[in-house]
Structure formats: structure tokens, C-alpha cells
Length: 220
Length: 247
Image 1 (cartoon, rainbow over the protein chains, first blue to last red):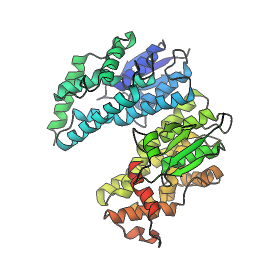
Image 2 (image 1 turned 60 degrees about the vertical axis):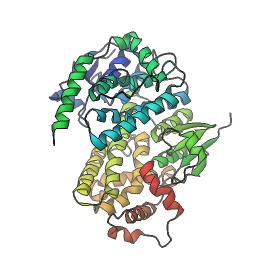
Image 3 (image 1 turned 120 degrees about the vertical axis):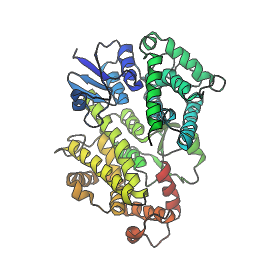
Image 4 (image 1 turned 90 degrees about the vertical axis):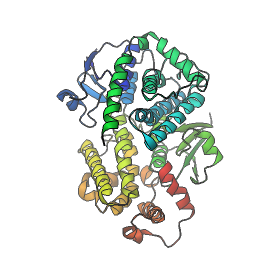
């Protein structure tokens, strides 16, 4: 098998999406930690367009954007599938994965905004969570059914990073009473061995986001 | 099994056009339904409760939403004709990457061009827009299509924006042909395909309601007045101008 390398960064949930996918499929790879404040020339060479992690390099060829990488991994290593085999169900899975991409951004604004911008981000975040609870998860154990799939991976950050943001801003978005299904999903997701063993240290994530928040809110 | 295909769409939507082109490429018969985006129909709200947006493809009663997901779905269901995505995993990943780039960079900058009042904001939007087009022109290289020798996924994702080029150029006072001549050649090449030319509305129609929207919102009209049609845009405007902001 050709060599697989992953350029990632420990604070990034996007990076973990690829880690989880590779590990769920049992694909051996070399992990390269990128310092996001001092990006390597290799990363910039592999991702000249966005200059971001994660980047998967397979047999020397780079693939960028986490959801594009996940689809590539799924097609290249079909064992332990992350996408449904039925064409329609695949379209639904892709819909929710895109939803994670488009709507997830609001959550990341919560810890670095105040005032009107913060209120707007709160509203959008709650709406997003409501959509997940009512339309995406329904009565299933995981978004993808009985086993973890691409949609669970796409929303993995809710299971870990959201809690950190809630602590930081002192506001609970994901109340157990209002979001019983999502609460159950978080518990199930984090109990999966591959996920449990591949999450960043919560304290470290908190410290990093706290620092970023202070820098952001201090600047004019 | 009977194949019932319905497309909920809005004429001016570059996203809706993608679905139209893909269906035409595959020769699929379908029912086109124009949505009044100022007064969204029950069917649209039922079929896309999350976003309430067009396009929505309804295949045998089941909805597929988001334009690029619709195109992929069409490609997978009707796989025996005119493949839209490459079969090679790496080429497929590249196609997905560049279609995503169009959504992230071209759409946003383009929209800023026609909605902004002018000055620094407009110049910044133009700069970003032209930059993203030049990147895409580089990706095209010397191939006839983004799909290489054949028309494919990225071509579908991007060519629909060409109906909006005239509007962008007029609002921004620049020429895409001057900045990216190869892209305009590529557009013309795509328009030679019936699946494209029959799916895309006349760019002057797009200019018409951009002009109407701008007049309504007190955004610099002058340059676009030449495109104001003598017939008041009523339903088309209703269908399109809110749609422009919400699809």
C-alpha cells in the first residue's frame, strides 16, 4: 500500500475527522503535527490554495478539505464503510455533512464575539442544534444508524469542543432536557473506543481557546 | 420502476441551473417547477424543512437537497450515461475540491459585487472575485473542460455562474474577458452544448432584476439602467430577487 501521511493540528476538530476515519478503517498512516502559527513549507506546497490543515497525502499526492478527504478515504478503502450503500441514503448523509460545514461555523464565533455578533451566533447555533435533534438524529443511536459514519464524524466536534466553548462563555447551549437525543448521541459517540482514544486533552483545548478569546476580544 | 423526477427551482439561481444541466446531460425527463421565493410553496417547505431553499430534486417522492449533492445523486442513479464525476478516487477528490472552491470563493465575492454600494467594499469584492477566477483559469490550463477532455462536475458547478458575469461586470465596471480570456473561451465552449445552453437563462434577464434589486435598495443604479426592461418585472422579480439572497 502506498504511504499515507496526515498533516494535522491537535486543536482542530477538522484534523480529528480524518484521524477518526483512518483509524475506523484501520489504515496505517504517519501523522505530522503542524504549528498553525508557523506553517511548514511542505504544507504550503501541498495546500497552496487554502494553506490549511488537514491535508492527506497518499502516495505523494495531496487531498485537501476534510470532507473531500473523507470521501476519498471512503472510495479508496471501502472496508468498514462510512457512507451508506444505498444511493438515496448517501445523498442524505452528504446533506448532513454539508450542514455541519455550513452551519457549524456559528459555534466557532461564540467564543470570540460579543454583543450583536454574539447574539446572532447564539441564535444560529441553537437553530443548528435544533435541526440536528429533530431532523437528523431522530431515534437513531448514531446519525448514520447503528454504527458511526461520515455524519457522526462531521459533527464530532459537538461531542468534545462544544462543551469547552460552553464553559468558556459560561452559557449552556446543549441542555439535556431540550436536546435529549443529542445528549445520548454525545455519550454513545465518546464511548466508542476509536473516538475515546483520539480526542485532544480538554484542559489544553480550553486553555488555547481562552487565550484566543482574550486576544480577539482585546483587539480594537 | 417508474422514474418520477421533479425539480423545485428558481430561474436565476446558479445553483438550480446546476441541477438542470446535470439532468439534461443525462437526458432525464423531469417536471420543472418554478418556486415563488417570496411566497414559498408547501411542497418546498415540506421537502426542504431545514433550509427551505431551492433547488430540491424530488425523485419518486423523495427529496434531495443542495445543488452539488443533487448533481452527485443524479450521476450515481443514472450512471450509464455521461459520467459527471471521474471514477479515479484522486481525480474525484480534485473535482470535489474545486467545486467546493467555486461555492466558497466565487459565489461570495460575486454576491458582494452586486449587493455592495461601492467604494472600498466593491473594490475588495472585485479583487477577491477576479483572484478566484484566475485560480480557476489556472486549474483549467489547456484542457477544453475542467473535467479534462469531457464536460464534468466542476464544469457544471462553475458554468452556471457565467449567466451572472454580465451583472458582475456591470456592477463592478470590469471585463472578465480581459482578466480571464481562457475562461470566457471555456464558457463559450460549454454553451455549445445543448444541455448547458438550454438550462441557462439569458444574462440580460439576470441584469434586469439585479438592477431592480439595486434600485429598491438604493444601491448605485446608473450603470444598470440600460438593462431595465420596459416591462415591469413582477413575478420574475419576486421569484428571483429574494431568491438571490436566500438560495
